[in-house]
Amino acid sequence: MSEYQIADCGGLEILQQICSTVDRVESLAEQIDKDGEMIQVKGQLRPHPLLRDEIANRSYITRNLQRLGLNIEAVRPVGRPGNYS
Image 1 (cartoon, rainbow, N blue to C red):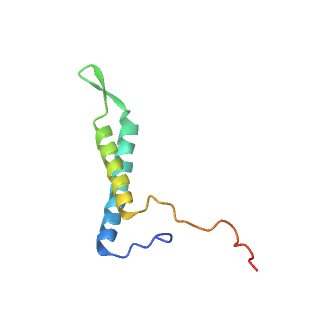
Image 2: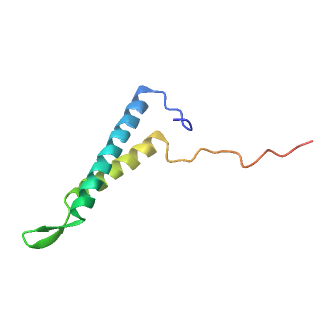
Image 3: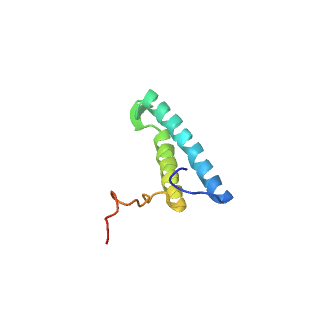
């Protein structure tokens, strides 16, 4: 919030949803790490079913960060301005 100004209620709601989705992704990643990326189902190794949810949530975060314009780094001048006479 110190680098970008989001003041409208719609933007703040999107930001809130992004933050709660980040919490969800961390929870999913924890469960996947605990169980392993591959799990045994009927004697066969299968990708963990939560992997799809994790990827979908990460995609949601990325899309909405772009929607808010937060994927662009703030432009800052490099160094001190030159001395023009």
